[in-house]
Image (tube, rainbow, N blue to C red; front, side):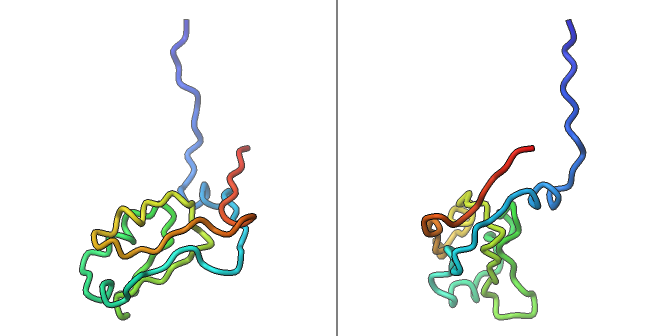
Amino acid sequence: MSTAQPHVPDVSIEDRLYTVKYRDTGESHLGVENPDVCADCTTNECTSVCPAAVWTVDPDGDGVPSIAYENCLECGTCRYGCPYDNVEWSYPKTGGGVVFKQG
């Protein structure tokens, strides 16, 4: 009896994320509650925990993250990654949001 594991193609995270579609409702379901809190943050956990790189902070900017909500996987990790509980997160309006497909 063979115990060989099935072959998993070596695909980059960017290529895998490309297969995820997002139905844009025209407005972000993500936000920052208090920009001053972000301006004082030195660790930017929201950017490092997001698997889809939705949150980015310009090193030469004011410290408030820019949010590419159209890439969001709706996993909610950013809410838990921010130690200041400063992330606004809600599900997109009905009919919008992430659409996963397989194959």
